[in-house]
Amino acid sequence: MTFADLGLSDELLRSLGDAGYTEPTPIQAAAIPPVLMNRDLIGIAQTGTGKTASFVLPMIDILAHGRSRAMMPRSLILEPTRELAAQVAENFEKYGKYHKLSMALLIGGVQMGDQVKALAKGVDVLIATPGRLMDLFQRGKILLSGCSILVIDEADRMLDMGFIPDIEEICAKLPATRQTLLFSATMPAPIKKLADKFLSNPRQVEVARPATANTSIEQGLVETSARGKRETLRRLLEASDVTTAIVFSNRKTTVRELTDSLRRHGFAAGQIHGDMEQPERIRELDRFKAGEINILVASDVAARGLDIKGVSHVFNYDVPWHPDDYVHRIGRTGRAGAKGKAYTLVTPEDAEAIDNIEKLTGQKIARIGKPEAPVAEAAEAQAPREERPRRRREEPKREARREEPRRDERQRDERQRDEPRRESRAREDRRRDAEPADDGWNGPIPAFLEFGFGSN
Ligand code: AMP
View 1 (cartoon, protein in one colour):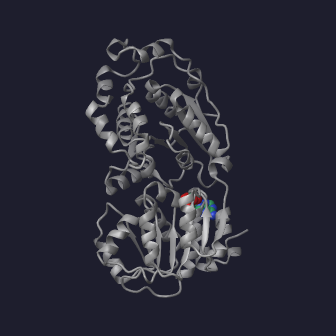
View 2: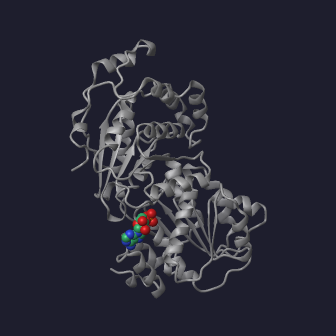
């Protein structure tokens, strides 16, 4: 199957050729023809499957005819995060380079002036996060009545982030005769309801979940302890085949602290999390893409859908709370046919979360080595902190003290977690927060770490 078989224009075939893409991915092959025929569509697919092009390509051809009018975008793409919105915009630039379509990006955290000016002139494509769009709509700067195509991307993440009421309101403001495309990795009941309400006779296409089907990602669980996590991670990062890595953590504070710790140990590490301003996030991403840093420590929301080529490894410093996040995280590697490795640090208390992940993906994840439980460590975990023997290797005392979050910082962090909707986990988080700071691996070095881990 070729892109030409899908009925795309010559201009698009040229830009696809320039991008080096010869064959449509399964989601593209399944979605492009019905979208070109103006059908509504439900696409069940993850990032990493080529799903962005599956709506961007046909949209470019559909929008090639017709003219934009002041304040009335002709199409609207809703994305849950600014990074994803920016990525979709890049896709329009890449594939639409032989077309004359205009585009505006409306995302939180950046100056709106130029975007509002572009909107006032009229744009063919508006890519927005729901919050910012509603904000502008309420200020009367935009009319949605000329919008004939709506894309709701990453609908399940929109649900997680509490955007569904905004989306319903936005849908109600669009013309009833529009074409609507909804993409989601999973179809929980509220998304199904949304689709039933706002899509008309949609074609449903589904591609296998990368976590179950993507054999290009080698996965493993690395057993460690709460206190040994940083040391274990450093050992993993030192493996010879780690060229670029994204390290995921569940909390913003951990992202910050871990980045500082890695830098102190000489790693070229940067960070991206929900508390950072947009320009700062973009700067870190650019540094990562340019190879100035090769390790990016990230929180889930900030890293959602990031499409960075050639990420050799993903490390889950924390086991994600939601099994779906596991699938999204590991999908940052092994993209577009490349090989990737994804390792997850697990402590005994993560057993249930791992179980849930394995249930969701229908796969057992290989246990890679098990550090011999150091007797002293187990004893230390019981003992009051002051009485613990200090047998730290490598890390000087002063550094370890700096790494330990102050109590008030920990409390503040609890209120500032990336995902406010996860309040039910507060107790669990408090337990995590109360855990002793990781001041190094005190036990013997696990055998598997000494044999060039991951270098086969
Ligand atoms: P997405 O699922 O949209 O995040 O896309 C994942 C990656 O696949 C991106 O880097 C795309 O540029 C790339 N990609 C999209 N379509 C193709 C294709 N037909 N062949 C090879 N790579 C592709």
